[in-house]
Every structure is written in C-alpha cells, then in structure tokens.
Length: 218
Image 1 (cartoon, rainbow, N blue to C red):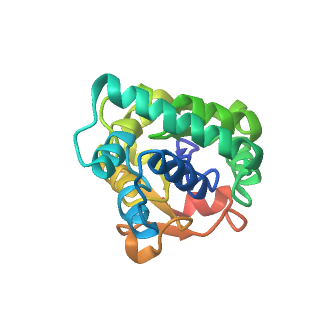
Image 2 (cartoon, rainbow, N blue to C red):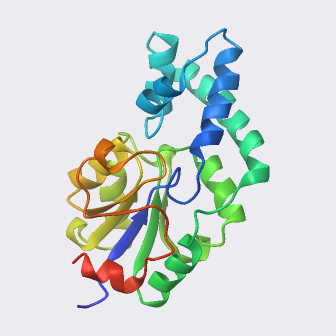
Image 3 (tube, helix red, strand yellow):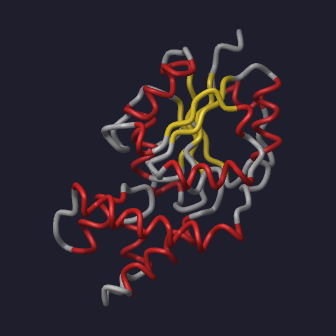
C-alpha cells in the first residue's frame, strides 16, 4: 500500500515509563495535604486521567479554573523535578520511530500532559525532528477519552482517522483512539490486556516492532 499512514504516540507510559514518577509526585503533593492515596487508588483514578479529574477525585471537590491551574502547576513542577534525572525511553522506541520515519510514515505525539512535561522528554529522547504533530493538554478543549487530540493530530498530519495508528497505555487513551476511528496498539506498561478495551495489537515494548508490522495492521 501507499505510505499514507500515520502513527501517533501518547507520551506517559508509551514513550517513557513516567507513571511511577507521577505517582511519586502525586504522593508528595497529597502528603502536603495530609492525604495518602493507595496504589489501587492511583491505578483506578490516576493513570491516563486528566489532572482536573485526579485533583477533583482525591480532594473530594470540584477543582477548576484558576485553582486547577495553580495546583496542576505545583504537581507537574514536582513531577519534572523528580523525573528529570531518570528520563529514559521505553526499550526500542527510538529505532522503531526512526524505521517508521525513514519509510515515510507520518509521526505525532498526543498527550494529556502539559507541554512542559512533553518538552522535558523531547529534550532527552531524540525523536522531535521526526514529529509532524505535537499536541499537549494546552492544545485541546476536551481530554481523553474524547477523541479530540487524535482527530486534531490526524488533521495536522493531513490524513484521515482510518489511516492512523495510535499507541496508548491507558483505558481512557485507548478509548480515545477507538472513538477517533483509528487502529490502536495497547502498550502494556501500566495495565494488562484485560484492563484495556480491545486493541488491534498489544506490546510490552518496541523491540520487536517495525514498519512492516505496522503495515500489517492495515
């Protein structure tokens, strides 16, 4: 087939294993407020969720507007401070993305995280030059599982949703990709297959992936 395909990557748990560091940042953030969520709480109410949802859930009240921005900034600054010395891509993703790029596949990143988090990772993982679309939380009005970030990515890359493959690790992220009408690869960094909606393919990392494997999804 022609190379009219795009591969769009989520960031947290897909490009890098950030979730343990988000957990650490949230633990620090909540401990300052005498709260102590469990691992189970985090698995259910943190991974793949927007900060507005997480903060509202754990603080047990609606957090929005100016307060949301302030609290989000505090927590994300903590995350970047904790994570900065440990940034490392998931095994095989850089050569995999290079293989896709060299074969004419259009590439994008679509994350619910703030742009500063994405910039930290792109400053350490050498993939930025291959990306035709970069979207973070500031670039959308509706967060995953709403498909907006993936539909906007497809538009940025000049392709239809049916020509796109999404890599996601969370329930809301996989759902967003499916809601956008895209093929979805589930990255099993944060959840098991059983915890995600049905995907076209599941991977633990990128060591066995190639341009050819992506073509086979079509």
